[in-house]
Image 1 (spheres, rainbow, N blue to C red):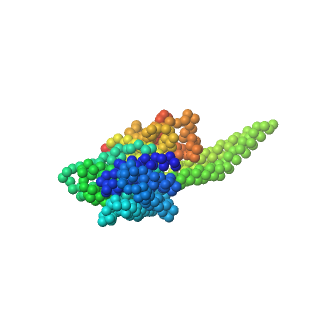
Image 2 (cartoon, one colour):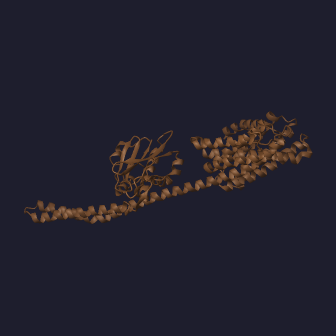
Image 3 (spheres, rainbow, N blue to C red):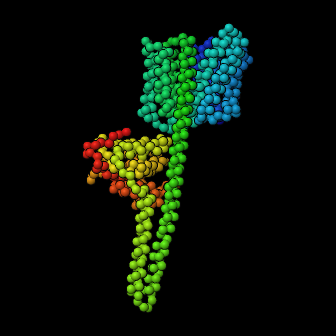
Amino acid sequence: MMKAALYYVPAYVLLDWLSYLHPVLPLAITPWNPPPGLSLALLLLYGLRQWPWLFAAALLAELLVRDVPVSWGWLAAATAAPALCYAGLAVVLLRVGRIDPQLRTLRDLTWLIGGALAAALLAGLAYVGVYTLAGVAVGGEFLANVLRFWIGDVSGLLVTAPLLLALAARHPWKARPERETWLQAASLLLVLWITFGIEFTDEFKFFYLLFLPLVWIATRHGFLGATLALALIQLGVIGFLQLGGYHARTVMEFQMLMLGLTVTGLFLGISVSIRQAAEDRLHQRESDLNRALRVAAAGELTQALAHELNQPLAAVANYARAGQMMLAGPERHDALLADTLGKIAAEAGRAGEVVHTLREFFGGGRLHLEACAVAQLVEEGLAPLIKRAERREVALRVSLPDGLPAVRADRVQIGTVILNLVGNALDALEGAGRTRPEVEIAAERAAQGMIRICVSDNGAGLAPDMRERLFQPFATSKVDGMGLGLAISRTLVEAHGGSLTLEGTRPARFCFTLPIDATAPRDQEATRP
């Protein structure tokens, strides 16, 4: 914690110096004042005991950045007042509001925004009041100065504090930016340039165009994306206004617009994050349910096998012992021995019928065949795994050539096959240490009127001891695996008249075939969704 505080003080002074633009007198009254946001984040993340550092950092900034011509008493009072207000805000948020510092709910964000609005007003009244009494500020401009202070500090609080809290909770630097992320950043810069960089545009009217990229980013990346976008917008607005030589009054008016944009973006981002978290929990529960159902199915299969095979196997054992006794006796019983051996064969056949019947039952039962586009089968099979792949930062690559004909398949069963194969690939990539882990799903025409669909990953491959027993039931290398996925998948594919095989081990590549729908015209192509 001491290390964080030691970083905090120079960061506070640096932020104060960088944002010291269009000040009112030599005071900390600027259109955008991010240091209070840094202070609030410090207290929420590292505890309320850090509050003395707020006073130390503010006093150092007053001396190094502004050097207000007042006595030490007035200077101490002016810096202590806002520090106490923002320390009090942290106390209210943690002790009264009991918010999660990682801001995971609408309630947490509402408390933060409401508290920031009130605390900034109290800090403004205290700070401006002290310097007014000290004779630095004009008494007739007290309310105007308080309003300017409030706008700057609220903007700094609501842009800086949520950003730091989101970064501390979500660690975005662990994920590489995707192409869409770069496009979103470029769109923000483009809108900023259109708004402020073109001479004949009305900045106040075009300012509302900034909602478009902000909404795009928030809906795709949630609360973290919204906070990053708002920080970039705030820096862009301040930068363009400073380069354009705008009057201080105009800058304050833009900051009022920025405040509305900030509140809207934060609420939109947290709403999207809440929805994404709910979806993740739902998918996790579905995964847990599927695992429980597989365990239950394995238990039912075991009980069914034990019950149905007990009698024929017991009969085989009894007949075998009887045959041994006949062979050991002094007299020959050829006819009786032949009859006993026949009974052994009959009971063995009965046991085989039981296994065959149970295999058909647990393999999926009756097929509901229909013409299915390959792209739709792949999409439906991947849908439950998309969030899981995103969490593990695995890219799902789908490679489907144009002109693939429809296949005749049971949509649910083949979706289960794709789900099992891709799910195994994701599990294989976990902890593999790949910088760009990916799973590829590809399809192509095969011989004899079949379509081959292959699933491969760039992981470490299969262990040598697993290759021979890969499709055997209960064979698995996973700690919590049942070893039924590949066995069931092969059964389902073979029920369609296809085959499921391992075609590569480093990297692992599983391929299965399905028959082309013979009822569709030869030139019919599967329409991609």
